[in-house]
Length: 85
Image (cartoon, rainbow, N blue to C red; front, side, top):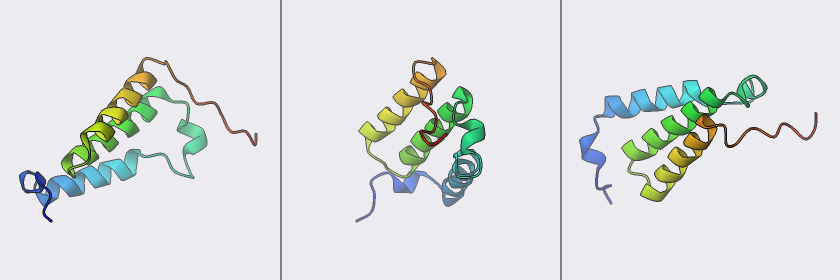
């Protein structure tokens, strides 16, 4: 089954979004450095929402990611830290 909006995004756009997502996303190597950074965390959520939008993700999931990003921007949520530290 072909996704309903798949045709509106050139393959280059999908590649660029994937590359940006990979660059912004927290991973095992930078988690401790950026886990509490509101701009980094909100950017990660926003690019995830954009990726979902371009790849025909569910509207509810896109909205949840954007709402979570807003909570980080407003500092209404913060990282609780690692329990093992």
